[in-house]
Length: 161
Image 1 (cartoon, one colour):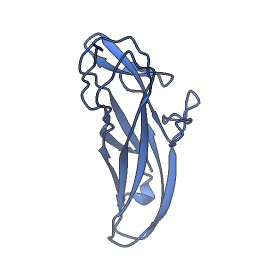
Image 2: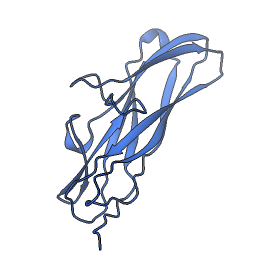
Image 3: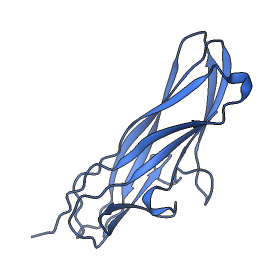
Image 4: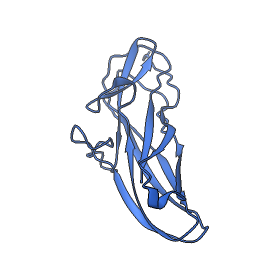
């Protein structure tokens, strides 16, 4: 009989912070919403990775037409390091990672520690909000010797425009 972990959904995006609005764009407002990455059951005796995805949707609204440019960055989460993010269950941890690409080669972060982030932009119309969605590709590596429990990590979304 295999030991199985019954993790809670990994809350990849829990909080949107809007910052960096220049005075010329004071009437502009951007916000984010998320669909978290949920990994389901983890079998510590398996060498298979668990891959899944979620999304971040950025919506911007302005009272006049503006050329909007913004970045979407993610925090390191509870581990405090991009090299290996960790979900926690009490004092126990389970490694995971969030990526920009489906091949899971580019870690999504804030640009430090060799991480990447989203840079995008578009022309906003008068009073018409514009939304764009970005996929977050998550992975829990296999062969981790962890105890059964519900594991959770929260990554903060930072939108700068």
